Length: 310
Ligand SMILES: NC(=O)c1ccc[n+]([C@@H]2O[C@H](COP(=O)([O-])OP(=O)(O)OC[C@H]3O[C@@H](n4cnc5c(N)ncnc54)[C@H](O)[C@@H]3O)[C@@H](O)[C@H]2O)c1
Image (cartoon, rainbow, N blue to C red; front, side, top):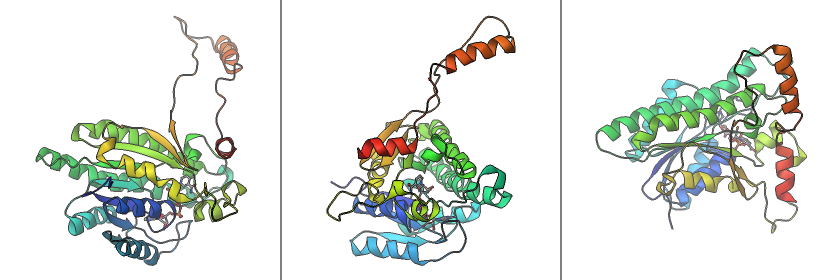
């Protein structure tokens, strides 16, 4: 059954890795796809048309419809052109998958202003830019009686949700896009729009070149299920993009390895209260008692991967 028949989707950064798999799967499910990709290196330098063009070729070869777009999501006006590419080629827009990403890993004491700005620009501002044009359009169309069931899927990361040393720029942006999904959802639900986020786990050039790590190594045999295949990330995105997921609002899912986790964000783990202003010494004593109970112990991505592969 085709889940996305008649839908039009923009997938940013769809020339490679996870975005490519999302575009291919959504096209197989009937969506017409704007394959956006600047085609740069994993650190955001350079550009090339071929990654987006190749994915468009693959989609067309399989009988789907797609068009390539090479704009950078970092630029507000360029993001408008990504949006217009959907309207000009396919007449409407239903789905935005904000997936484009780069890495500039440094410890905080070594991070340059440029490394900070470049990562925030792609992940955080880029996700705002494309979502902003789409939401303006969905609201206008809704007022005209044209209900497009808009869908936004943000791409967060365990780096932002759990924290990862060396990624204060990237993790801050990724935590922010998860928050942005929740907030945009609250603002846009009345127009039939949902916004959700995923935190992928997959082997792509970002996890191979960007973070050389045995955690993401390939399966040994071709016949065996490859848990780190980026194709394993895409199904939850295709479903969230569909009308069937109309009641899923402001959720964050980890996806990959054959698993989909429903994540829960900041919730109260414990609290201390009294009907008076705290004395800081007394407060410290009480907080230490609560913290000693281990209530703030956090998941790590390494443990998550180990548990699912066990
Ligand atoms: N691979 C993982 O395990 C993992 C984990 C957590 C989050 N993510 C996120 O998933 C997303 C996809 O990453 P990936 O692993 O497939 O990496 P990737 O490098 O294979 O793909 C990212 C794509 O984004 C494109 N891109 C970069 N800057 C752009 C810009 N300004 N405008 C348009 N396109 C741009 C790149 O050209 C590239 O094709 C990213 O947002 C990444 O942060 C990946």
